[in-house]
Figure 1 (cartoon, one colour):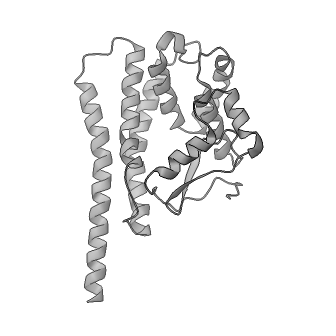
Figure 2 (tube, rainbow, N blue to C red; figure 1 turned 60 degrees about the vertical axis):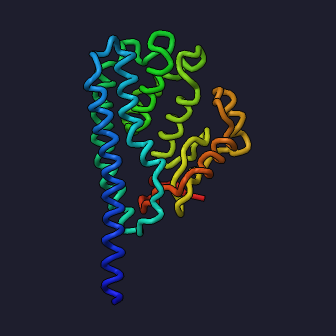
Length: 232
C-alpha cells in the first residue's frame, strides 16, 4: 500500500511539473506567434516593445505559479526545465537587442520612448555579467539627464554586485528562501531609502518588500549563493 501511495504521489508531482513547464512554454510560443503575425515593426522602438513582450510572458506565468505542491526533487527538475526554455528565449532577445543597439551606446528615452527603453532594460537585466559590464558604463551619464530611469540603472548595479558576491546597494534583488522571497544582503541598510530616492525609485524599499511578501510561494531551488556571499 505504501509503495502504491508513493507511486501515486510521484505521478501527481510529475503531472504538476509538466503542467507548469507546459504553461511557460506556451507563454513563450504563443507570444512569439502573435508577434510574428503582426505587420513588420515600423521602427526600432516598436521592435524593442515586442521583444519586451516575449521577455515578460514566461516570467508572468512563473511569478503567478504556486510551486509549493511540488516536492523538492521535482522543484529542482522543474526549475531546470523552465530555465532551459526561458534561457533559450532570452538569448534570442539579447542577440536582437545587440543588433539594434545604437552607436551612441544606449536607447535614450527621448528618442525611443519609455516603453521601448523599459523593454531594453528588461532584456539586459535577464542576461548576465558580461552584458551588464558592457552596458553599465554607458548608462551613468544618462541617468542625471533623465534619458535613463534611475531604478533600472540601480537594478543592474545590484545584479552585478550580487553576481560578484557583494551586497546590493538599492535592495532590488530577492531570492527564494523556504518558499518566501527574501532580499539579498544590503550594503549600509540605514542609507538604503536615501540611495533609492536619489535615483528616483517610484516606490520605497519597504513597499517593494511588502509586494514580494504578498505574492504566492516562490520556486524554491537548491542553487548556492554567488561565491563569497554570506546570506542573512
